[in-house]
Amino acid sequence: MFVSYLSQALSPRQFILLLSFIVGVGAALAAQLLKWLIHKIEILLTSQFDVTSSNWLFLVYPVIGIFLTAIFIKYIVRDDIGHGVTKILYAISRRQGHIRRHNCITSVLASALTIGFGGSVGAESPIVLTGSAIGSDLGRIFRLDHKTLMLLIGCGASGAVAGIFKAPIAGLVFTLEVLMIDLTMASLLPLLVSCLTATCITYALTGSDAMFAFNLSEPFSVNRVPTSILLGIFCGLISLYFTRTMNAFEKVFVKLKNLYIKLALGGSVLALLIYFFPPLYGEGYATISTLVGMTGNGEAETVLNNSLFYGHPEYLLLFLGLIIVFKVFATTATNGGGGCGGTFAPSLFLGCIGGFVFSRIWNQHELLGIHVPETNYALLGMAGVMSGVFHAPLTGVFLIAELTGGYALFIPLMIVSVASYLTINAFEPHSIYSMRLARNGELLTHHKDRSILTLMTLDAIVDKERPRLTPKMNLGQVVQAVSASKSLHFAVTDRKGALLGVINLNKIRKFIFRSELYRMYNAEQLMEYPPIILHTDDSMSTVMDKFQSCASGTLPVLKPDGTFIGFVSRTRLYASYRQIMKDFSEE
Image (cartoon, rainbow, N blue to C red; front, top):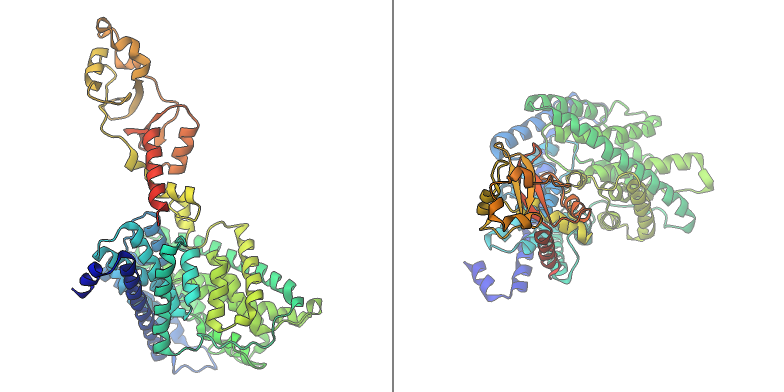
């Protein structure tokens, strides 16, 4: 009642700001609940492990976690809650803004089980989905229009990123770069309110310290620009490997229809990898804290704890190199096997290890006579891989600076992020989140024309009401059938609905006014088969291209099996385009 009263007492703009504040509060609390659950489960399961040797329970915990998550999703949630950011992108691209209400809590519980028991994924994507679900739910409760609904979804996503990382700027930039919400004065302030609210609540609950304690061993100097560029290229290649391999390995799980076979494959791959490489357990943030917070020699070797490599620091680089290779398999096995998690943490983890390995090898060989600080380059690597995997260089820069307090490294952060992005963009034009939608022509981007075509649907502009003609109808019957219609084009179909041809009244005008010819001609003699056909699976970009390639003002639409369903007129197509462009451009 109180909020309902406020909706009437406040102006629309003030009410949106109030809702963005509420979304920020909900996203921050959900983020802290998830991190608390993960921490408690992990401590309960692993706190008694002997760091000097591997533990056979690493073979058990991940399997249990994936099993519990898969059963929870299948029998309680009964909905696919994986690929959280992709779901948000789809909701935005379809201009629906509808994210199911259960995602406000189910993503939190499912990812807590998965990650707490060792799933090699991150908690950030589930929290982003949770925050967006909160925004979507509020929008539906107050029956807001689609544009405002999508803005609240963006507020939820940005608040979630800001809350879980204590990174308000990164939360804002993530929404603009990855979710591709347009930056306008109408959207900027609600996004900022959500980000700042979530960050302040997180500060109040956990303190204002950065998420990772970063040790700036040496300030940046100009002579390290070449090494920063090379690190960026290296991170771009890691990102490309991670993206392509994940997509390939995911297809293996997609082909498996039986839940328990997926569980067996995903659980066994994940358990074996964690047994041999314990840093793959969970999010991997302990490893990141070690590598970016080192204050002396020998600290990096602690990543060998709990492994078969313990006590053999000479194998550190080999150990970390193998982790770079196998991390993608552990992450994909977690989600493919039935777990729930995202790729935020894996990209940060890979970037940190990649940056450390790059700097350690560089220093061992004293390349170009330049020494590079390992902690700095571990931090830079995090920004590089994140920028490459998500195709979001600004998010990489600001997130890593806010995560670690490494603001003194803004210049190398920018260099590495841009170099990584340019490297992967040469091979892969879409991020790991958007490529699934891009393949289907369902991705909303900052390119206005493409975005308008994405928001359009062929079914919405098809005229299905015109009378259909049969091939044996004589001219008199044809005239009688079409006399009540204002259209000029009519389909001639067989008994099964397959298109045989089209009659254009303009082309038979000389016959239709001569009644003595009505029994001399039939539809089969008067029809022509159209040179260009539209299909229901054509993208709107293809539909536009087909109209531009011909002079016809009307084209028939067929299903893949050849069944005729209706006509699309050039006039109606362009009218729909202009209307969506108008709605899309309004503040």
